[in-house]
Structures are given as structure tokens and as C-alpha cells.
Length: 625
Image (cartoon, rainbow, N blue to C red; front, side, top):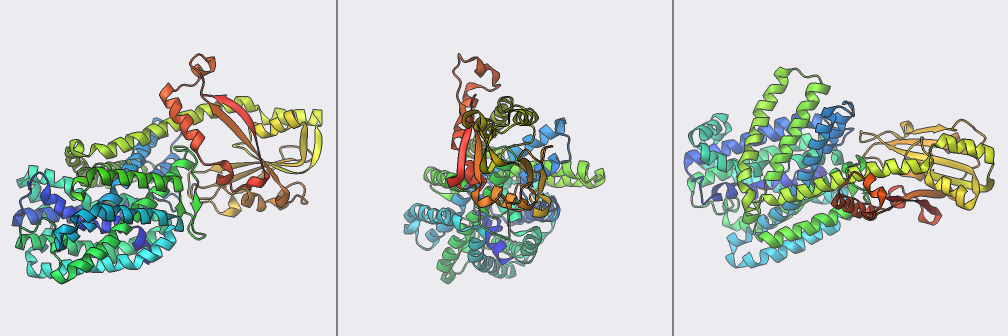
């Protein structure tokens, strides 16, 4: 649970740093810090957290885990298992999942930048001359954070957990004295003040909602990070530590603003006594580094799921824990995020400017997750309408209002996460369409496996000693490497194993349930077929999978240490516009170029399958796209 504090709650736990400052800074102080405005806004903040985080995510949505994995893609995969693939609703859920994941990427680049910069800007409260040091210090800190990602979230969580515990104790301690000085702020606990604020000052409330959403940033990362630590630990940490600390701090900031309306320039640091401001800047900086960790690890999870669901190409995934399958590190994603964060810091230079780009991706993802969850509970869990409608009206209505308010930010920076999300959607759609075309073209080149086995039986090719292993997508067609080995080398190994790694729409499959072995109809031909079923959080380790079934293969004398791996590789090249084969590909020229670029730069299959390079042979064919 302590490690979960250090990874899962960093984003939402550091939102008090900048959210209230943004509320009263929007549109040249449209939200005047009067008593009624402050109580109304704090009530909006509290009930947004209670409805969206406590009720929606922690209580409801986290029950919709896909074998322990969370996030909008895990939710989409859970739905896909229960909806016929050719049903229109299946296409709708796939589209919602893709857009939600793309928006999450947009959010994941902004969060580290705004979190670290907002903490470092607290130094300006102590000494305005330190302002010029914020930018270079943020670059150094974020560089160090992205460098240590390869150590794994478990190690990072154990290091960060105690710091976050100190952080939550500190922000609770900052808020409590101000509540005692101005107990009338406790009226904000009643939802009637939020409703009165909306009804009496609708435009002010609408504009303020664009900043109120900052208090629930990290809710989707909380759900996506669930696979790293398990839902039970996340729930206990939320209700016992995080929620009470956030409530006390927001109430305390509201009480301070009522007593000192001029202190809205940086209300979080103003709540601290002067002697505590230097250590508070230090602990806040550490906490915002950890806030960045929450969204980085969540992005690893989303990227892994997207790759295994066929939405993105293969990544060089490194599993960093033997106990938790969801704890992974993806170098490509890590450095892509790092580059994006540096570009955003260089372009906006302050957290106040960055806040104009923040929120739109968050609210879009919140709303899309709600849509998928409502489809799930109605069609799969068979909830009655009287249980579904209150969620749709209350929580969905609140999130729709937050999204509408954030549309005001599009021209001032909100377009940035939309552009990032749009680029991710283009990549996903190009990869899906290109992969479908290549799979179809490859199947025609491979030919039926049964016909190939019949020819082998008649031709009786020369046999050579040893074990040859052919990774292949399925049982229907012949591996290109197997066909080419006979065609070019005119030999067949004494023992041959065709193995398929079958991805399932669940996160984990126990080892005892993964493997199925068949002799393909003739136990004497020396060719066996192994089907290994894996979840999207499981490793695709072919040597380990075969080690589980060596005693089930036809000849027990086969040794894995002597096996040679033959990889069937389709060399994909671009077709000329005059090439008649180009017309077969149902993709625009620019989309084909995107697919070719992704295909050429995806992770090597020897890495993905944990195959020793020194005993690997590549054979294949050319496919024109």
C-alpha cells in the first residue's frame, strides 16, 4: 500500500498545488474571491472528487478490471469479449477505447511538466529572484525521473511511498489550522452550495469548472495503474490517506482565501507559515516528481495493452517484477514522453500557461470511460435502467459540464493534447489497417498447412538432426520459414515445433492453462504444433512456454538448449504508384507510409519472444504495401 502511494496517487495528490490558483486566475479573476464564491467553488471541488473519484472510479469502475488490469483499453477489451466481433457496437467500443487511450497520451505529456514546474514556482513565494531558475531546474529533475524508469515501478514505489505519505500528512496539516480559524468553510461539504453557485452565477461557475477539473486529474491514471498493485491496496490507500488529506487541504485553502482574498496568487504555499515554506517547496518538488511517475507508469500500461490488442506495433517491453505482471518498462514510450515534456516546458515556460492546455484530454478520457462502463453494466452485467440512469445523469452530466468548460481553452493551448491525441489515432488506425492487409497477403503466400504436410509425407525431404522451432501466428497456414527452409536448403529437421502465441482479451492466464499440444495428425512426421494462450499482461517468452511441455512432445530426447529458432519475417516494402499490387492495399499513400515507418521501427521479435539471437535464423518473403 505504501508503494501504491508512491506511484498511483502522485498526480491527483499534487493537484492542490495549482488547481485553486488556476480557479481564481482564469479570465482575469472572473471568479472573484468573495465568501460565497469561495464556498461554492470548494463545494464544487469536493463533490467533483467524491462523485468522479470515490464513486465512479474507486467504487464502480475499478470493479471492471480485466484480469486485474485497469485503464480504458482494459475496459474496452473486457467489453469486446462479450460483444460479437461483427456487431456495430463492437466497432463503437473499439473507437471509444482508441480515442480514450489517445487522449490519455495527450494528458501524460502535460502532467509531468505542469506538476514539477508548479512546485518549483513555489520558490518565488520565498524569493522572487529564484523564478529564473525554475525552467532549468525542471529540465534537470524530469531528466533524472525518466532515466530511473528502467529500475521498475516497484523499486520507485518503495522509494517514493514514504515521501508521498509525508506529503499527504503535510497538506492535511496545512489545511486543518485554517479550517479552525474559519469554520464556515465546512458549509462547502454540503452539495447545496455547489448547486446554488451554479444557479446564481452560471457563467462564473462554468468558467471555474475549467479549473475545477484539475482537482480530479490522475483519476484515469489511478485506474490504469491498478494492475501494478491491485485494486484492494489502491482502495485502502485512497480512503485512509489520500482522500482525507485532499479534503482538509482544499477546505483549508478555501478558508484562507475567505480570510485573505489577496492571497490568490499562490494559495497553496500561502497556507504555510513562513518558517515552513522552504521545506514545503522541497517536499512539494519531490511530490510532483512522484506525480509524474503515476502518469508515466500508467502510459506504460496503456501502451502495452494497445500493442497486444493490435492497436500499436511491438514494443521492447521489460518486465521489472516477478510478482506483479503489470510492472513493466517500455524504453520507446519513456523517451517519447520525455521529448514531449521537454517541448512543452520550452514552449509554455510556466505552469500558469500550461494550465490552459490542461484539462481537455482529462475530461475527454473521463467521459469516454463512463460511456464504456455504462455499456458494460447494462449489456454484460445486466444492471437495470434505474441503476444505470443515475450514474449517467449525475456523473456523466458532471463530466460533460467539465468537458464543455474546457472547450474554452482550445484557442489558448487546449489544442495541444487534441493534436497529440489525433496523431495517436492516426497511428492506431494506420497500424490496424496495414496489419490486416499484410496478414491477408501473407496468408496467401504461406498456403494451407495441411497441404504442406501432405506434400512432406509424399516427397520425404532429407532429414537433419536437431530441433527446429517455428513461431507462427496460427494453425491454418504454413510458416514462411518452414516452407523456405525446404525450398532453399532442401532439408527438414528431425524434430520441428510450430508454436503460436495466442493473445487473449484478459490480462493473465495461469501457466497450467496456457499450453495445448497436437501432433497435427501424424505422430511420425516429426512436426508438432503448440498453442500458447497468454493475456496482455503476460510475457510472450517462447523458450519458457516450450519448457512447460517438453515432456508432451513426441520425442523426449529433444533438448531446448540445442534448438534453432526459425523466424518467418515478411519484409514489407512500399509499392510504386504504377505497381498493380499497390491498388490491392485499401490505404491512402500517406497512411501506407505511416504503416511502413511503424513496421520498420517496431521491436525485434527475438526480443519480444525472448529468443536467443545466437540460435535464430530469419527466412521470409516480400510483401508490397
